Amino acid sequence: MPAPIRAARGVRDVLPAERAAWSLVERAAHGAARRFGYQLIETPIIEPLELVERGVGEDTDVIAKEIYFVQPRQGSEQRLVLRPEATAGMVRAYFQNGLNQAPPPARLYTIGAMFRHDRPQAGRYREFHQLDVEAIGEASAALDAEVIELAAAWLRALGLEDWTLEVNSIGDGACRPAYLELLKAYYRPLRDQLGPDCQRRLETNPLRLLDCKEPQCQPLRERAPRIADHLCPECARAFVEVRSLLEAAGIPYRLNPYLVRGLDYYTRTVFEFQHRLLGGAQNSLAGGGRYDGLSEVIGYRPTPATGFAAGIERVVLTLQELGRLPAAEPAAELAVLADGPDLAAPVAEVARLARPAVRTLTDASPRSLGAKMRAAGRAGYRWVAILDAAEAERRVVRLRDMDSGQQRELRWEELPSLLGAEPSPAGVAG
Ligand code: AMP
Image (cartoon, rainbow, N blue to C red; front, side, top):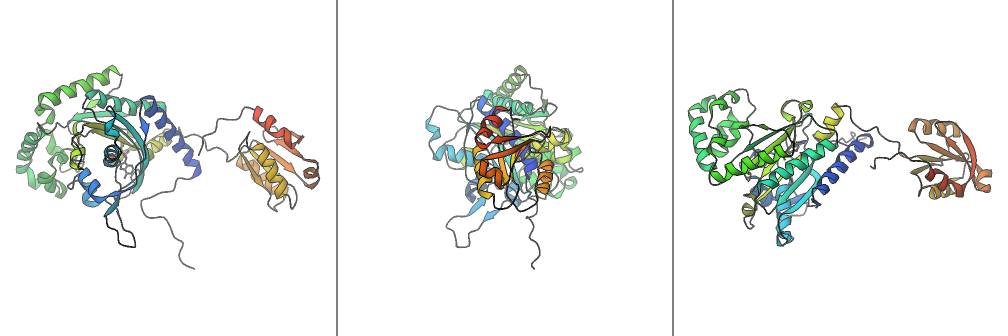
């Protein structure tokens, strides 16, 4: 026998018990997005390498180390990759499908799988899922505040209150280049004290020096010039506006001068939601900001945009840490059990009659009725309907209420109205 095949490293199965929590998180996301006027969009998981490469910037970690290539067996004319994030694909879809013809902004969101070949650890996976929210086509700082408010509304709807929100501005094409020169000038004499990654970033992506987690690099940033002191008037004004809108919305935040984003296309507002229960380097629930420079680098008209991405796994993990996961619900409310052999057809017919009213499954297996009843008890069904050959002949069942143990005879046709009339627990759809 060949060795049992296991899942790839860094990916995970979401089993039914946990999927109920995902559904809760997703439903809250759909609800929050829709309440803010955002519309659901689906973009492909596979995108051209160039989109991802130019979209995230070739010097960032994601491109340097973490991209999954998709290689068809038969040669392909295009180099394809699994998306590591959704924003570039969203912006591509916005232009390619003419959404830019409608009055701006386009308010879009999606929920789906992303792929990064990173070192797996708790809360960090190679396949993970994001809620991705984007407002494309308008430069207004009000939209930055809006997507932050949407994220906060979503987390609050899930009962998550004690996150921290950090915000910063990383300037734009007008003020950032000069700031980066200041930053490099500050760090160059300290080069030997930096870790190898930061030595490399010093020339390629100096902003990333500020959010390096290495103990040897961190203290050095204390004296580094802060971008907030070097913003151009437009960026400074936008930053003030975002902050006052957050205050008006009752959303607490902290200024973090070291908060930057790894991706090159971000401008002005950047933000991150964190939760202490996630712990360590993986404490980020959601991150985002304005990315006015993205559309141009992927070949479209310069178009301002803002948005965020949040980790579904991280939100579920936080709910779990708080003991707020919904109880796994039974697979069905009613089980129809055969008491004897050769009853598959009547069992199926009874189930068919009951399904419009309640979630119903069947057991026409040759196991004993006792074994079926024990299984039904463990599974937590609310009712079982039992029938033997004579009852099938008379088109009746024994309906048993599993809580009270009460049992009574019922005609098949009476099942839907009787069961449907009972208030059924509002189940979490899978
Ligand atoms: P990013 O796209 O890197 O800005 O990440 C946005 C959010 O996605 C983070 O705040 C996390 O919640 C989540 N996330 C990012 N990378 C991973 C990963 N490898 N595994 C699980 N969640 C992730």
